[in-house]
Length: 305
Image 1 (cartoon, rainbow, N blue to C red):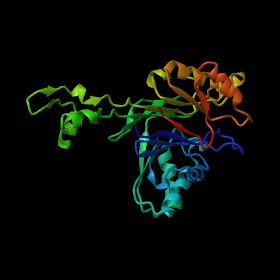
Image 2 (spheres, helix red, strand yellow):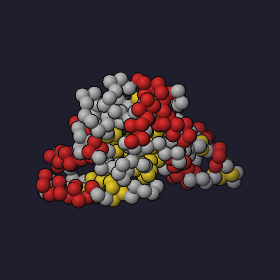
Image 3 (tube, one colour):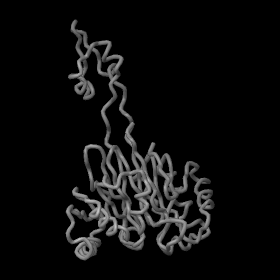
Image 4 (cartoon, rainbow, N blue to C red):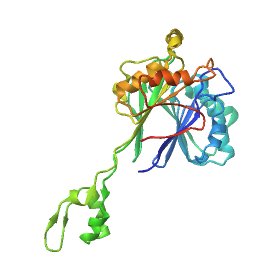
């Protein structure tokens, strides 16, 4: 099974602290590298990972609060200093384009690579990126400004060849792809060997849902049902539910409810309020509802399984 990993670069909320960086994650899936959100300090955190700086293909911005996008222009300028040549794709609410164009004109007028902007409609769930291995879809969220999450889903793979059976029937390598695609095999005596005897089932497709700043949404689980890993903001604990409602954020308990309703395999909490010097109370609150919960921390790498 090819790697599918989430690297946490920052998991704090808007007010800076010495404990956490602003929101950003790197999603590494089947050789592709993507970034979700790009708060201040992201490029420093990216340097600390084992992910190659130059492999980043696209950046997905959830919304236009500074703790989710202030690091973008710095990242682009560093790419220029590193000699990047390949395009960098930016997926974000349309309002970012004018600001990004102004910053590029001022700070990066002579880029040797294209910054390709793709406006995102935060109000609908739809596929906005697709290649041979993965799709990325929007997840409409409810925050104080237009905001969406992102769902990264592997495309189904072909079944695995049973090498023992290939050798037993002396099947030439030129026929392997046909068998992967479902073909039977006919031996020299005309006997047909059913395809089911020559392959084993493909690995199940995996999915990661990134749910950034949002109030609790009762219907959200319908869009992310069965995800292997769910990142859901958990800015507050239930004692501060009034603040969560006032600022359109979620509590740890509400994040756990979404994970439970979605039948997720694993929940990752993040976007912690600066009021907490120890997020263990958030973890305990979530685990009472959804036991397989982990606290995001800078430098944490989570396998999507």
